[in-house]
View 1 (cartoon, rainbow, N blue to C red):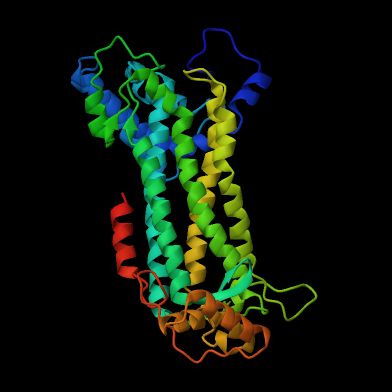
View 2: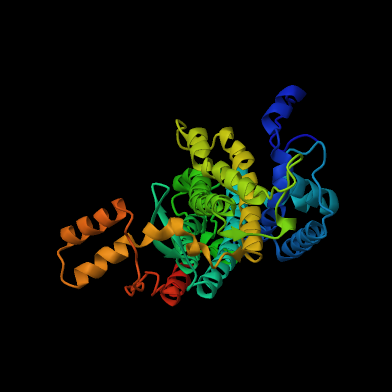
Amino acid sequence: MGTLWSKGTSATQIVEDFTVGNDRVLDLRLAKHDVTGSKAHIKMLASIGLLGQDELEILTGGLDKILEEIAQGKFTLGDDVEDIHSQVEFLLTQRLGEVGKKIHSGRSRNDQVLVDLKLFLKEELEIIRDETIALFDTLQQLSEKYKDVLMPGYTHAQIAMPSSFGLWFGAYAEALVDDMYMLRGAYNIVNQNPLGSAAGYGSSFPLDRDMTTELLGFASLNYNVVAAQLSRGKSEKAVASALSQLALTLNKFAADCCMYMCPNFGFIKFPDELTTGSSIMPHKKNPDVWEILRGTCNRIQSLPNEISLMTTNMAHGYHRDYQLLKDVLFPGLEQMHKCLFMAKYMLENISVNDHILDDEKYTYLFTVEEVNRRVLDGMPFRDAYRSVGIEVNEGKFKFNGELAHTHKGSIGNLCNSEIKDKMKKAAF
């Protein structure tokens, strides 16, 4: 079949194989967005007189048929077709005749792939938003359920001060709010229409770019046609940066779970079917899910750096290097979906130890509480600190008081409702 851009000479197969790489496989994920973009484009072409109404109806019917095949999983790229854009145009020409060749007027594959990518990334971010909110809700529910169950807090991996499961679960819920801000920022960047920028320098056709912006559901235009092309790579990096921040939160939570599952801690546990055993040690219940999640999130955190290295030192305008971004970002998106799902699934099956502090090794967890109690009774802070320290060194320290954490965000005042309001405002 050849390539749409062929000028009569054919590239050698070895060059074509190298330059196309894995792009044809990844392009299948853009298929429905390519057709959606084409439907908006031809409607606009008809509005400015470049297509007749009868031609618009024929092409729209052809595109709807392809869209139906995509939804049914029947759409494939032919072995001799370079990309999704070529496949759609070839199918239309094959099925509808010469009118199929008119679909590309006023477009370049440069702005076409940008539209596909932005529509795809918008959809992916919307799904990740919903998955993040679902995980947030689960964490908040656990925070409320276990708000009165105390656990040790640590600094420098040393026993520090009293914490609670309510505080722990709630902390990661609020951390997801920060991640939502990042997701929202990335969404705003990709939610701009590049269609009409063509190869990066616009078109002599009187294109109605406002019309395609509205039809495709973009919030705004990439107005400057050069700036539209500059968004290639920047859009992917913005999404990768948001994923990286979300992955950092999940990574730290997974690390906590790996540690807290260890019998030396014994803070949490999961059903046998959610852990794995040892080939030689029958007592083992390994945190493999959390370990894989932790490692996968480390990989996701590398995405912005990979994309930065792949997009640096290129002058403005399109370069074939950009094609490789899909090899990096698309698997990262898939991994993010899996991590969010598994984190929520594991948390729905978590059990917590509500007698952790019965162990005498946590006696010194309350030294700060005792210092503060003495200060409230009138003793200067430094004197209170020194007197408690002496009792600890002499093995005489005992704490018989009650915890009195009342300020916002503390053990006794988790502010979960306020945090929920923050998430509502952060979501897009």
